[in-house]
Length: 161
Length: 161
DNA sequence: TTAAAATTTAAAGTTAACTTTAAGAAAGGA
DNA sequence: TCCTTTCTTAAAGTTAACTTTAAATTTTAA
Image (cartoon, rainbow over all chains, first blue to last red; front, side):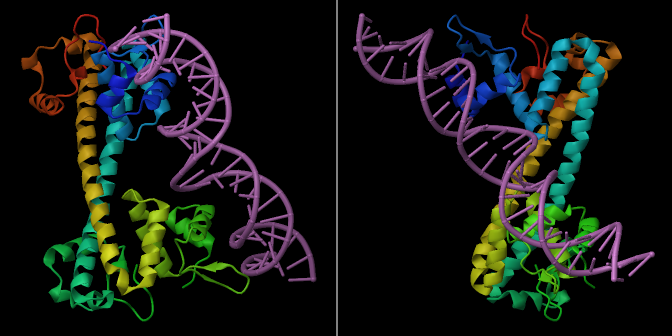
């Protein structure tokens, strides 16, 4: 089964010019061409595209993905470098997930804050809620976010962010 | 306690020109100026910067952060819109974390794959490992990644990505 | 008081990853 | 065959988020 660039665009959601751009950048070196120079994608090319999407999601730049593909083409002599690349990227994604969990904590707090502000009619009313009336799960989040005292009571005239 | 832009740069790790850029874009409307026009940062400005970093990590663009700050300045009449903004962003971060977990699965598989290729001396040797010799935790990951058959045995002359 | 270091601005430059445009060639249906 | 759609390329344009430059203050330390 062969696919045109339009088919692949539809199946992957990537615009055809993006696919041509990836090809031009050396990310799709396995795509064959018909007589007239028209690209004929196979299932394996779609798999490469899925891997590319995944590597992009992991934070790899296009030139780094090309580097990996070049290593792949070179064969078994590059196993160590490919291994290193995946370990580096795995650690990077693990760090990114931890960072996002921290961000999620802040956003969860802010959602509670504005839910409550919406109920009470003002931001100040939320800031004046006594510690013992704050839900435990929110308190827990606040504790984790010690460096943000933007979440505490307003002191004097300083505005809370 | 007041800080110059150099102090803030050192404390936050953000280059001074980046701080000026944020200020120019309206992200730091609370920073005061001395007689000569020199910025004097307060603790609350540092807190705003921490919030900005967090919102950026959540995927918000600078113009969206500015929008939030404008809403903040407008006061209690914008509580609903701010609430909506945080809910939207929270959901976006939750999706991003799920996406990254999928990416992490692939990377974990690839790390195992190249660890094993390194041991066995070739990629093909790994592809020829019988199903029942593959560690359970790797099998589990493979099952989750059904859409990537780039991880299975080589069929005919098709290259695995 | 004076020299060096840090700050200011506006404006131009950079980078990555596309996206758009234009003009032409190939494929597919009537 | 002819017409419409889809494909091709190269080149220019776009966007976000800085980063760099240059020239002019202002601050600080000696």
